[in-house]
Image (tube, rainbow over all chains, first blue to last red; front, side):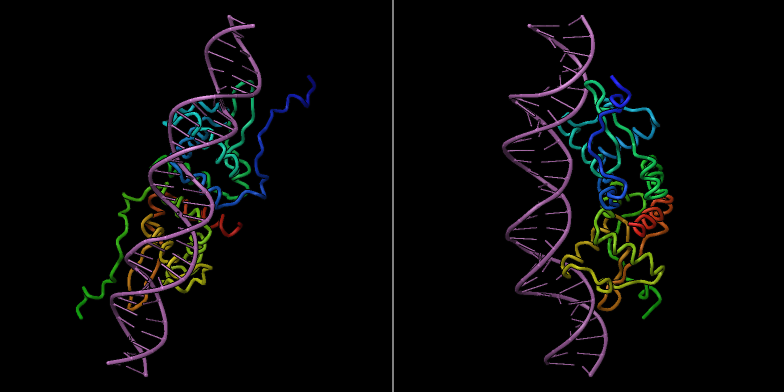
Amino acid sequence: MTATDEAPAALPEPAPDEIRLAAVLHALADPVRLRIVTTLAAARGTEQNCLAFDLPVTKATQTHHFRVLREAGVIRQHRRGTSKMNQLRTDDLDALFPGLLDAVLRAAARD
Amino acid sequence: MTATDEAPAALPEPAPDEIRLAAVLHALADPVRLRIVTTLAAARGTEQNCLAFDLPVTKATQTHHFRVLREAGVIRQHRRGTSKMNQLRTDDLDALFPGLLDAVLRAAARD
DNA sequence: ACCTTGGTACGAGAGATGTCAAACTACGAT
DNA sequence: ATCGTAGTTTGACATCTCTCGTACCAAGGT
């Protein structure tokens, strides 16, 4: 395989200028998704596969929540083998909405 | 009238320890309510009556949105004469979730 | 007393959301 | 080839949300 093939198969996500504040806030306004985001933030940089979160919902519901987060621009997902890896889009969010993600994460920690 | 009568008739609102992050984020995750909040923030301290916002929805819908914000703990409302005055609960929110409101307001300004 | 103004209450409807079960796909290991 | 693991898809369901129109109430001004 060539070098270009090593690029992870990223799933469709909004470009930075397509990320809407209301959509981001909506994505974060759910306990399950908030937990996903705080878990991802705690494992800074380290990618996590979807089932590594021990969420109190079924697989189908998890798929739903991960998609909401990705389509809002909060996380990035790409396939690796049979798993799907997740990371926070920290850089994009910080550039667009400085301080927002940090404030939410700190707030969630105290919640 | 006595001094105690001058206390504004505040409408029911959650105590600070009853304010939930998910509820606040959900309250902010709506374009109409985001506009209410930014308008209130722009008129710092100055109270605004409900119909002074020029919102693109009917009175009934406005009542709904103001209630969502109040029940989430984002705004405080009290009657004055025939009007109802609104203010941001800046102090409570800053104490609970430091930086969150500011980050959202700055984000909304750039949105 | 009347009317105007600012706001609420009550349905009601269209659509979004969170959840699940069950069947399915895709990849990797054995 | 078979099996297990990880995740998706579909369809369904209950609930919530945003919106409206209409009727209503309450406080002030004339």
